[in-house]
Amino acid sequence: MNGTNLFKIALRALANNKMRAFLTMLGIIIGVASVITMLAIGQGSKRSIQAQIAEMGSNIIMIHPGGERRGGVRMDPSEMQTLKLADYEALRDETNFLSAVSPNVSSSGQLIAGNNNYPSSISGVGTEYLDIRQLSIAQGEMFSEADIQVSAKVCVVGQTIVDNLFPGGQDPVGKVIRFNQVPFRVVGVLKAKGYNSMGMDQDDIVLAPYTTVMKRLLAQTYLEGIFASALSEDMTDYATDEVTTLLRRNHKLQEDEDDDFSIRSQQELSSMLNSTTDLMTTLLACIAGISLVVGGIGIMNIMYVSVTERTREIGLRMSVGARGIDILAQFLIEAILISITGGLIGVIVGCGASVVVKNVAHWPIYIQTWSVLLSFAVCTVTGVFFGWYPAKKAAQLDPIEAIRYE
Image (spheres, rainbow, N blue to C red):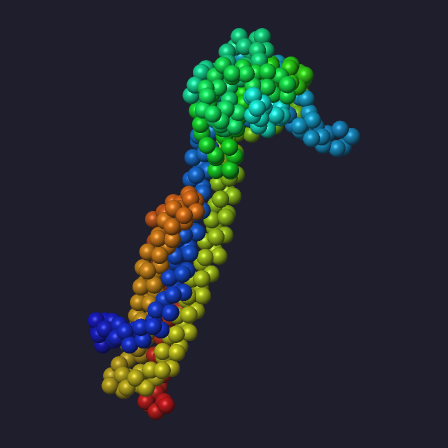
């Protein structure tokens, strides 16, 4: 019996039981659609995080005080005072792989402008902070080195601050806002950036000269951190090594002593987040893949039922010359047709579901070609795997016993 005839017989058998064939496909459809949708959500989240990190600056290096051991107890890094202005000046003047450096100190409190107030924090930074964080001025200007030298009470604010302190749409440039009773004159407004992938409002920001925050708000001489940017993303590791060497020298640390500071780069953050999203994507795909296995078991069950119902038909075919291999091929073709048809419908449903998630839930979605091909290939293999045993059972039936079967 040739392949064309076997294919026609398989199609006729499925057409005679349309509802049963569709219900059998349903497990495959749901499985393929789930895998495609889950992978699209995972890959979309990964690409969104990468884009957010790129916007923040992929070559950023963050230096913070490190926890120190005292009496066998590691101290909280936020309580340490190991970073000084001298460290910032050394990094600014003596490094070869850094393109920009800025100190960082911050204070939390209440911002007040007229009758409006808003809880926020003010960051004391240098003039190169905008380049490091890839921020830009939309109105006014950035404070100058001269403002830093005289600890001027000036600031640059983000759009969220403007919306809450100046809701009437008035121009904030030149206006005075108070922070913990200290007046600051607004000299510039930052270009809006919105929320990042971690849900943080990037426009809830107030920048002032670091000397002003240190002297007039915090009354401290140490830094809470130093932000820097490498000449390029490829040079981040060289810049990190250079910073480590310079700070260890400044802090007079011996070779057997641990660093009293910590250095983190955006590359490390990107790698960590990518690993996390990859793990979550794999987990989601595995959970969705369970439905493919369930769909395969459904195919096996239905094929078993089909073999039982058509025992006499099998016996008749074998008595008129059909070989065991022909019977095996016939039932395998039925299983493969169910899998492939279910897989195609599942691909369409999965892509459609991904678009719905993107438009309704506003989640980042990215459908990769390999995920579609992989899920389709898996469903086909599933059909062959779970359809083979019932087909083999049908091929091994005794023709005489099969014809007598009631």
